[in-house]
Length: 163
Image (tube, rainbow, N blue to C red; front, side, top):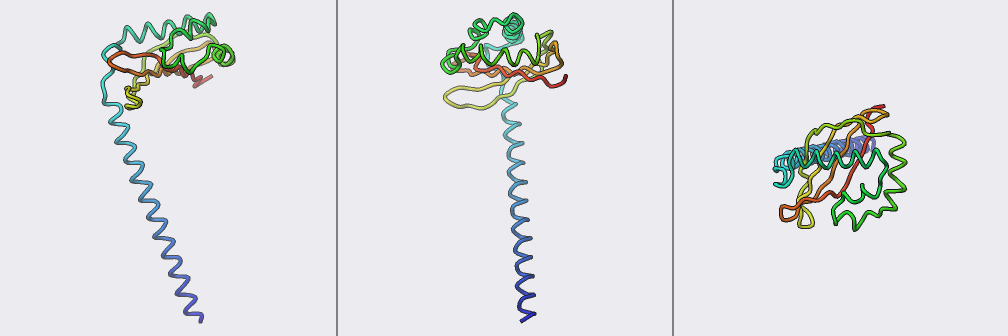
């Protein structure tokens, strides 16, 4: 009876080891596929209507509207797709809270962009800017969608990275 229990215990331990090994290999292959997807996302060129000048124009408009707390003008920067989902009232309620943490935008510098993929018949991109706020260093991410070579702003994400 003791030998039989010992065999069962060994069998259970071996089964657990194989199960854990299988899970580990599955997770390793999954993370490797994400790296390939990231490389593919980055490889797509910027939309033809986006260049250094157009990005600087957008980020400067955001800087002016942010620093003057002109939330209506900031809302006007968004494209029609975003305006259908973002109410001015939401911006007027949430952005002042964020501005109290960051302060004014002092300076910005373009960092890089990512191709986010093709969804809803549009190419989605994110453009990143490093910036200095009154209260520290941060990042501004502009999200866009491009349909028929026409790009519109769909989101602004402001992060205070370092105080």
